[in-house]
Amino acid sequence: MAEKTSAAAAAAQIPGAEAARDAWKTALSMPAALMAEAMRFSAARLNAQADHLAKLAGCGDLNEAAKLQSAFLSSALESYKEEAKVFADRLRQGVPAAPEA
Image (cartoon, rainbow, N blue to C red; front, side, top):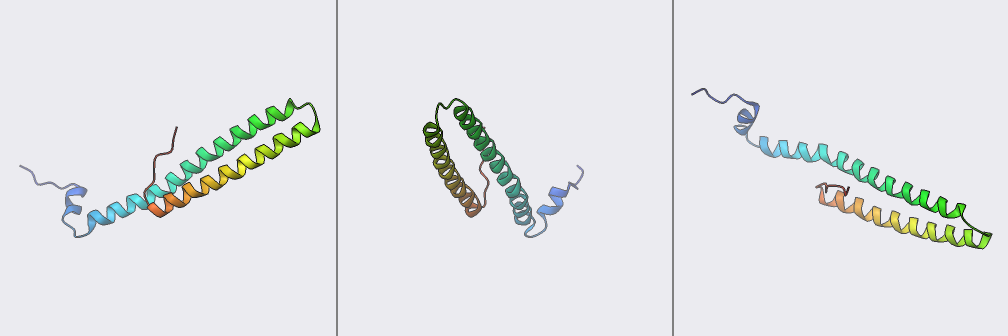
């Protein structure tokens, strides 16, 4: 039977090769996972803004518009605070979680 000559078989014989490969996989997947999370969050915020603008368009007076604006800004600040925690947790763990669909 022919001897294995694949890169994986050759790397298996090099001390530390598997650990180096795993480190590279993590290093390359982290930016992609963070970008996916940023895109998910951005989409959610843009949808919230579109909903807010639709509500503003239906306002009857200035007081109602001010209340809607205040509620929207409070909600946005809370969303950004929570997203900062998500990013910090992902960076601290070093292992990307799959973004929600």
